[in-house]
Image (tube, rainbow, N blue to C red; front, side, top):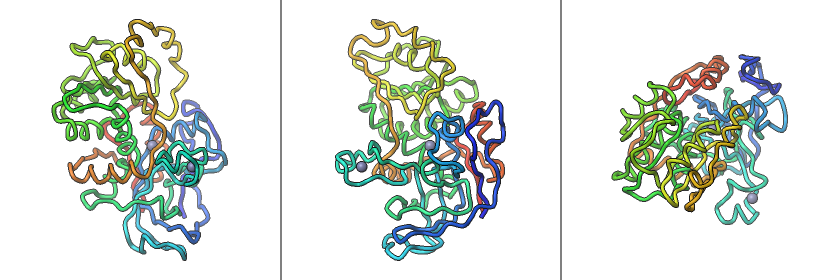
Length: 342
Ligand SMILES: [Zn+2]
Ligand SMILES: [Zn+2]
């Protein structure tokens, strides 16, 4: 099968083609697994963190990609949930132990044996993937394959982030960064909290226009002062300055949720601008989001279909994965990037 493979950690500035197109041995499903013929795979910022070594795959070479949509091609002997031909999605959570305290409490995203699709196990930048049946999801009919792909990470983790803000209807919500995840979160927030105003901080005018189209009450630059304080905000950027600025805009007792698996080092000195009375005093909180649970993915897919959320998708061929990643790094983004595979 064809696959785009990472065989060496590198910086994208120095190597704009980190993934190589190879003829990869066909996988075959174990008894509890399904083999999926992939039709679409979303491109996520986490792939940049893997390629550049901020969350390095434990083994190389590896096939990246964790927003996978396809059809069941073959099932293992003990598979009960899926049949050949059914459409499924696969998300960042590839497996967890199922036995530890975290797993038993429904926090399998925090399991120390958590395995990620496209990092600890081969992912979706390929024609086929095998996955345990318990870690695959039925996809609502409302969505095409390409539309469904970004729901599986950008959407599901965005949903988890929004839950973690603890926001109530009518309370202001801030979104810092407006890429693949935030453009889905705004649609979700407008539906779940119809009386809340959404304030979007984005770097480019294009992203701000997009945010306004999707119902942002305000969209502008981080440096601008807001007319109102925010009880909750979600930061989806890879940088540090937005954390400090985001805290400044919080209401007393407000919460800043950081939806990023890793932050980059480039502007880390921004943290020295953290002024305790201005940024943290009065019971402001910072919380990170780690991974997703299967329940997050299932709940989100269902809500997304009810609304329905419309992901904006920019399409690339599998062979163009490097191009998609470079554009993501350079923030040439509107909506979500997805590889069409077939
Ligand atoms: Zn992701
Ligand atoms: Zn566990």
